[in-house]
Image (cartoon, rainbow, N blue to C red; front, side):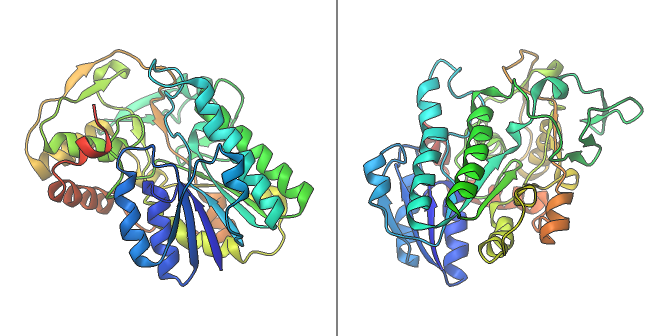
Length: 355
């Protein structure tokens, strides 16, 4: 099958490209290479047989000139929840990248009758009920207080797809939620299959190390190099929790979606995440790092950040029911993979997250 991957030289795009090539697919992809570190993935992918095009998904002429494909896997985005509000990035550019760019790809799918798989995000879920979620601290990590009423769509297993998506969800989350809606509308209107895979925190070796976009890779690389680290917000204790998923664990469901018969829209959107079994707090991550690399002081700074959430874990029960899908790589294996990469790439933070 001919697969087109947007953002093919990013961490997620390159990981999926390697797996799809190994499975026998013909892989083409494009990347704007504006993300530091992405150029390092180009030559290795080309050696595997991928065709790589330098193009920006905001460029309608470039998108119209792309070769035909049977399916598009959309792995291109500005993935930071702070994008557009951090004083360093433009809100207009965020919308152009994450929403207008999606529409350009959907126009491509309309022309070629190509299927479309959007890799979306847990950040489409509403901040307000999560920010006021009753929690307790267990083993150095926040957890929902199940003795008190919890918001609809949330249990100790995580947020399911019925959880609220009303504003505020951040500008980044809004662009992804709007992209989901436009994707389904294009697919229904113009007759091509669309799937939306809402992903939890994606992590693994080779992820670009930025605190706002690749927290696991950033934390391990910074710890190993004895770089300054801070527990921000939530009392400065580092109890905030995220789940963890390796993007290669998405490959089995992508194969099933490529071959899926027509399905109701409701069955084409699901959470894909490590879930509660993979969840870890920053404090717990530090304990792992101390055992793996040795001690390092972390500053306790209770200063809150916009849109930050203390506990964010996705429930993947729907994906398990619909696709017989489960995460395959445990968090400890993901962390060890990142650690080995950090040890063999001493300049990784300078390369992928220049100051």
